[in-house]
Length: 299
Image (cartoon, rainbow, N blue to C red; front, top):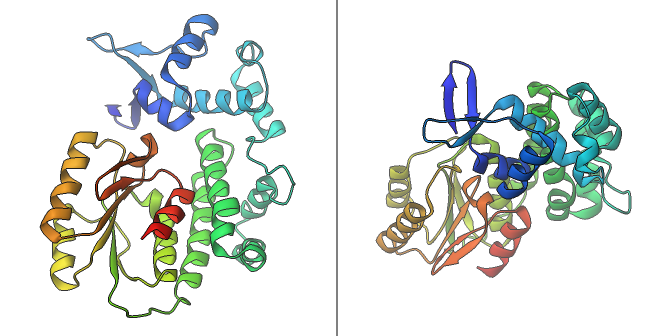
């Protein structure tokens, strides 16, 4: 992702692929056949897209997932696209109808924390925190982000949803007693704060499995991993990384840290891992909350 000018970002076709879940060759086909997007090109003939085009493609992908043909979507103007999204939803409602993200988001839009929290904690009481996070909280945050990116809700409303979910995660996590059996893990955020709820969820998973967990909110540096280890040694490390990190550098860094600190396991998550899961010796990259649960179970 590059800065175009003050207040304006540009995106590569790979960025669009990661954000929208649409393969690059499909994006190119839609451009050529239907004129869905009209990217500019750099001096080296590489496509780049504006933020408005990225938002439009997210909207198009939602409607396409909901069964609208791309030929029909291509004939809609911007206001018609948004009306269709609001009418059809984002396609992530569960088949049994028990989770209705649209209703939860409508509750959140009023900024009534007590009302919204009560709706969410009902899922925790009925399903337990792990299933509530996998089946309700995480899909809800994904939907809220899509609606913000497509200008259907405001940034404060999207942040409010993530904030209330985080407070529930923290309140559940602190009730888990540490077993003090000598097993210790560290969770380090080298990426962005948008993944923070996944990190708190991971802390809950690790504590539930008998680990003492060292975790500080906020973004740290790579050197902080060694600094924390020197004070409170750990054998398991989870690192949240931004999407821009190259594969070879990530694998090399994880291998180096694991060897230097004599770690048993290293987990990579965050926007970087959204490019796909992989495993390399002691190191694994996990791209979903369900993957976090499986990884924690494997320790």
